[in-house]
Image 1 (spheres, one colour):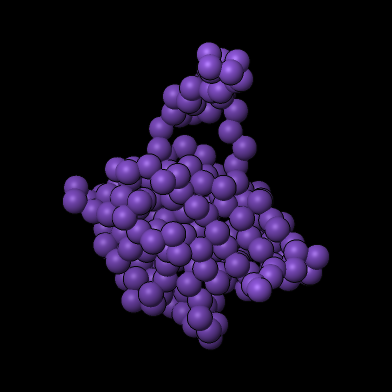
Image 2 (cartoon, helix red, strand yellow):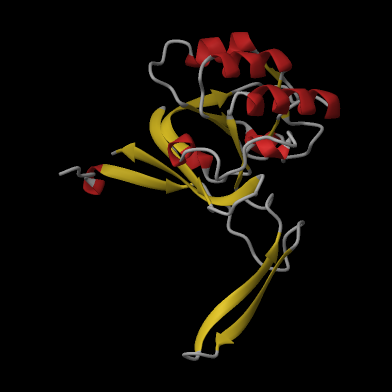
Length: 216
């Protein structure tokens, strides 16, 4: 029988906690009763791009795959943690950088970018390190399933470049996992990553519970 020994693993929750009414994007919940048995339920009013979320191809392509068109295995895999230690803000993530950081690792399915000098950047858009178009092409050529990052990274230097990197990655079914949290709690370079979307037909994106499983 298949068995995962969690006594020998750490589970790190990379999901941002969301507080209704306190987020920049709409998130409201309303508590109510189910008349049939007088139990409680909630109505949820929100957006697909809120908190920690995955983005599927239909986010950029009118006839692209939505979150239900992709196999659930697309949202999990062997991950490589890439520490970005640039001293100066607003630096490019290039193919050369990615090759040096990832090139020697085997069977990498997920790339997790971590800014180890995050406190200096304060998640301001003008300071964020950014993925170049060439960097996106490098990732797309490596059969990567997912690119994972927090708010200290951007997917492009400007609006046009951001659109191009999205088109390159999502065009190859490379899923973007944005607004993760707690990356500083990951101890190992090689981990297992999961971020499962809601199975709602038509969604271009979905909030997820993102986790890393790593050996003790």
